[in-house]
Structures are given as structure tokens and as C-alpha cells.
Amino acid sequence: MPIGGFVINIDPGTYSEAINILTGMPHLEVHGSDKKGNIVAVIETDTTRKMQEIVNHLNGLECVLTVALTYINVEDERGRSISKAGRQVFRTFRDKEMSM
Image (cartoon, rainbow, N blue to C red):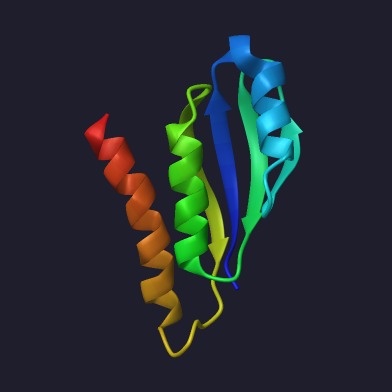
């Protein structure tokens, strides 16, 4: 079961809207935020694939500027190695950053 810590950077002008969206999302828990647009969140899912889907959804939101992975703990998923599962989630963030 992967658990990831993230910093989600939003457009400060959309703070209320973004907080409402994020607090309503399953598997995502907001742990802190500031009016500058930085939101600290934890995503906990059953699979790394599901975590990737959530991150992809976040990246598609108009109010979200960036999603940065700060911590991940991945337990073995059906025989996949822990390091492979972690790289799979990390790749999503690296690819987005490189395309900016």
C-alpha cells in the first residue's frame, strides 16, 4: 500500500476553490496550507497505479500549478519490487517537470 507525501502548489487566487476540491477527494488528506498556494497533502492508495491516477488528475486541475512528491513508502504489490513501484510513481513527476 503506497503512502506518499506531496506539496501541491496552487494559484493563490484559487485558494478556496482548490482547498474545497482537494478536501473532497478520496485517498487524499490535506495536512496544511498557506495563502501563498502551498498545500501539504498525503495520498494513500491500494496501488501505485491508483496513486498515479490521482496525481494525473491533480495535474489536470486548472488551479494546480505543480505536484511535488516529497516522500513515498511503498510496500510490495503482488510480487513487484518496492524500488520498481517507487520509481513508477516518481517517473510521473519527473516527466511532468521535464515537459514544463
